[in-house]
Image 1: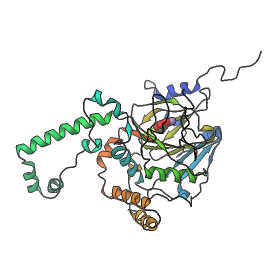
Image 2: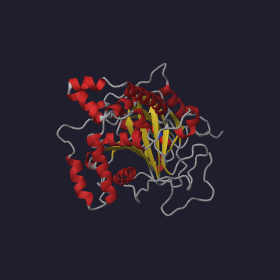
Image 3: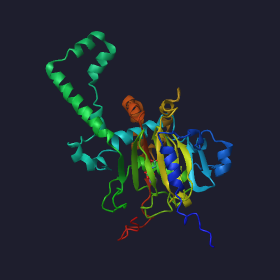
Image 4: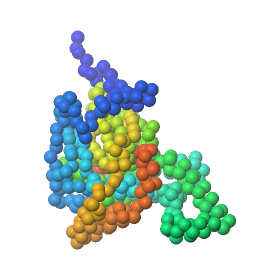
Length: 394
Ligand code: OGA
Ligand code: MN
């Protein structure tokens, strides 16, 4: 009798592990996760975990938020070839910039979000910038008065009826916008992924953000990917502490030789990485804010999932500037690159502006309850145009 392969037996080990980490009744043992901050020799042996030495790309400009690659910690797993986990990628409070982009900028038109499809359900047009509507800026004169001068503060509080009506309206607006923001699940950038037919189309496209393009090109060059990565589409996922992302493969891109770059922000998560079928038992990895995962080679088309998001122990420190280091690195770098690329120095200026002026508190409060992930994809091969028919419809 011919022995059946594990595929033919129709076992779903992926689901089994997914369920274990999703389960709320019997919470999983998080100490079983592969934790790249604290690798056990058992895990090193079991998965063939090795440190990957990185290159300092010389053909791609390094954004001011990034550490030099010699301090990044990158690991590969022999059992899952092509998967790379990198930590310590971002400089001190460099992650704040990306949080700002994901919460303040990316969920705006012409980017596409799930909110576009539930606007009717929510019963009102979405404000142009949902984040600003959630957290309207307090008038500076008044807030200064409150901070600096008790008398002036009392005067400021004795506002007229008209002012009070204005405040009540803006409170109401901000509450309804927060309700709206809570429903945000995803944003697509560049070629907008169509979730229904699982395709990209040459006609559904907006500009790909150039900061994310620099970031992903730099990361892929650092792990030695060549030719140069062409970021063309991204999906930003927004998770609550009780959200999950089911097992799936990302196969809708036409170029499967190009890696997927995935960046975690906010609370921690369990990330499962399996094989090209669900019969392969997935490895469960502990992801933290600022971690970067790359799926390339034979794991480019592997099943993966996020069965759990959970409160981080180090959440605050992920976003704190190191004392003394201030913005020196950014200033130096800006001067150095100013001559090289106008577009690049625009981004550097924008980053510096965010570092210096961002009122971080509402962003931090938001992230205490959630996680975000940006996954960046190359859709087409270099020089390729959209084929007439789509390659997959599974
Ligand atoms: C995806 C994805 C992983 C994550 O968006 O396709 O796999 O960590 N995201 O959110
Ligand atoms: Mn995916």
